[in-house]
Length: 400
Image (tube, rainbow, N blue to C red; front, top):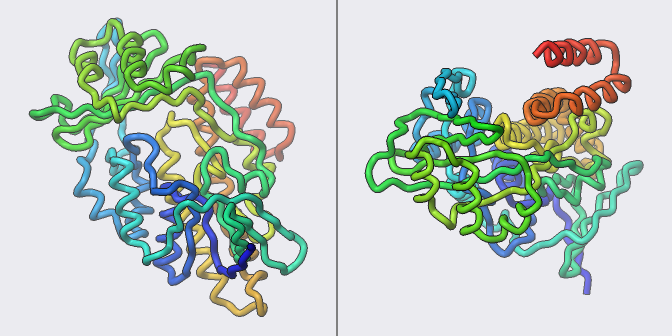
């Protein structure tokens, strides 16, 4: 039997972005509920690299100081070509604060700051009905027959977002690259200090960052193979394939992989992304439904900006809603909600476009011809000013 509930703001997805959005709204005095389809909060992946912009957002959320206690600051970076042993210094975090956080620590801290009963577990959204032309509330149907009628729906449901299809974003695409991630614990101090290291050999890249003095987060990217889908289901096979991929790397790196925690290993065989030009051609909202985080701007991890950009989304969206929804513009508050989401879209569009474009360029540098075709096909759809900037980008790539 269906039952109806009226809510002001409903967030679909209880990952990092969903919890951060709920907390940002709470800090602004706005109530929300988070619908998470899993029976418990889950942190997919071992760690997240938090860039300076992410730390600014965490400060706005009021949890930066607490999280700083869980991770070391990364103070230097080193790029090493394995074949010749050449070292090049890297600028980490553009000179700002950069740390490697355990995803579980971030999720736990976000959840602990929320009011009781904010997160509803085991709630799967079956369908969403949106009326973009009237003041009618959108309708969310849940798997148990519950029908929610919120003023605002925020899709934070990740790269395979259900809400994104409602808003009208094209499906995400994927790179022909896979990523493997893991954590290694050292009984005594690890040898990497507070530095980020990136090793490169024949198209295989392995990066590592200290979490604390005893734990190191590492990641590896390489060309996708036909067996990766099968390997991704078995963590022992993930370790074996990683060791195989780093043949010829320094012994202490091979030792680090061999000693990694098997339970921490994760292979992503399809690194998905939203095409940057889709972000420009599509509205970020439909009626009073909008998107944030990977649901909006899924990025592969080449710039390590996905998490930080998602936290930015949360802070900006909460500010826009608080500035508009407190004004009694109409009895239902729908006009105020739409004004807030329009403001959010205006503030975020170019920011996430340029981050997505830069990530896309870095991710496709191994296939420059395909990159040029994609960029030029998009240029004809843009105005003269944006075309000028992208032509300069293409010119630089061709010179390289």
